[in-house]
Amino acid sequence: MDAERFNQSCDRLGPFNKWRVKHRRFSSDERSQLGRVQLVRIEHHAGGGHSELESDAVKRFIWFLLIGSAVGQLYPYEPPAPTSGGGNHLAFVQACNHNITTSTSTLTINIGTTVICSASSNPVAGHLVFVYFSNLSTGISGACPGVGCADTLANTWTCVYDATNGSGYCYSILTTGGSADTFTATTAFNAGGPVISLELSGANATPLDGSAVFLQVATATSWTMASKTTTNTNDVVIGCLSNVSVSQTSLFTVGSGYTLNSDAKISGGGQSGMCEYKTVTSTGTYAPTASSASSTTMTVNTITLAFKSS
Image (cartoon, rainbow, N blue to C red; front, side):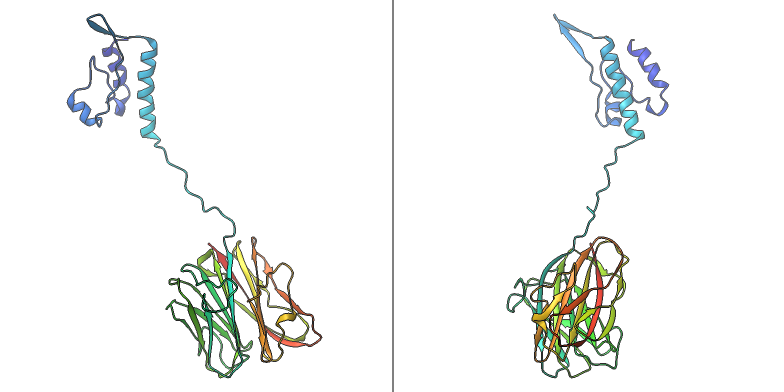
């Protein structure tokens, strides 16, 4: 096939007729249009001159370049979309506690290396910090009416207090971390109570899965906390309980499948509290349990909630 017959074949390709073979090389205008890409002409140098190889292999190679370029324009390569990796990314970092036995309307807890926490580390920006508090006071409920949550690192907190249950919680995805932090819940009541914090990594930017569920469990030595139905596949389910009449920490027995960190329980001054947790990988209804090895019965206030994985 000579160059002229090859060019005639290229003309039949319509929009791809720019791929034409010249006897020697593309003109300067054609090189500009093609982005200076040239088809390689294979030459055989012999003696004092040279001659073009008109072999079938050369023809097939040129057609391969032509067709490949056309297909590439019609079906450009698109790399596969990145995947999130799936699974539950939530992980426990540390727990801290503070037992407030005096009458006060400000319930505080220190988080970081300056206090006794299970990891004794400063909170990390991007981590979820959950704080549970209880003083058995009643009279208001809802999204922080009379309850204000704040910390010394000026993070933004969401908080809820339940009047019937007499306990509440606050949480924040920290925008500021790296140093010791003091959290304060300011209430409308003058009462003490246990305060427990949990720090978790791998939480969703909007972490709460639905609403928390409160429940008061009458005098007993074992308790089933409020049932929480999750809507997100990968969660951490947290169950907390407290009382302000019996010191009970060393006698708390964690519920099946849950973890109770040594600093996620507190006792003294005739009151006690605990927060247990477990990570889950399926939606469902979860009701944490706990029990006492003591024959002393207690009325406890419980809360169950779930946070979503990133």
